[in-house]
Length: 384
Image (cartoon, rainbow, N blue to C red; front, side, top):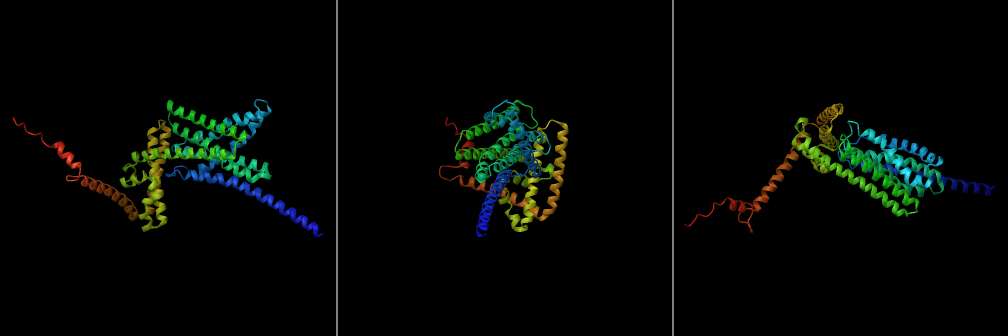
């Protein structure tokens, strides 16, 4: 009897360990890709991408996988292509097109902004596709589930996300324009993403080392990050150009909106005097202001009258939200925000004045005022 119970206990422990490893692998296959997505979202310092749209793109990624999982095997069964050709050629083409369908819809919406949004939403569609694909691979090979989960989240998942992220950025760049450069960007976005996907699949199916697969995945993520940073720089110029008194935004508020990377550091006096809750209100306010500036630039670039009306309606809504946030922050807090940045302007001019004084008359080697004096000095009189 003792031997029977001992055998049953051993069998239970083995089975328990097996299922624990499987569940842990499934958790990795789900949570790590989501962590990559939220990490990429942090790059959008203006916060123009909407969380609910991120969820929609994730769900669409699941749908796209379901469609691809039906079409790819059907192509092999009909004899149109071999399994090897599906992996290396047709699957990358089909999957990138399917993932991008939601992006084609989103970029046409008035609440869509620019390249940053496109890259993040595309990355989300790729992550959604990758998560469900992870689960199929993990549950299909439970004996090596943990190894598969770790290998995929740092390679294949990032390749899926990179491909659709680049297509999203290209579609966003083309948004509202029918010029040759805009269409060229879209075509190149699709071609590069498909080629990137094909190259990865070919490399992996040929038995490449896992190290190289990881490298490709991380290079893809770095590429998306650089696209987001470049798009952010363009949006910063738009904010500086379009944000102003027409939206009841002071020069000091517009200044910090255009320098979004320094937001938390610049608002340190607000946090010290009014607390963390008020700090978050002011940060939200400044991001709303920045989005108004971006929307005004998009309004300028949009030819379709109905779309222009939709954008104007969104701007009015943002203005109402901005005024509500101003009231929540309070008049004294807003005075501090404006004073801090006006004082920074004055400090810049004080620094310039000090530099000019340092290079003035009497300094070794001459200076600014010496050179001015020489330029305006009257010509010497003619001795004759």
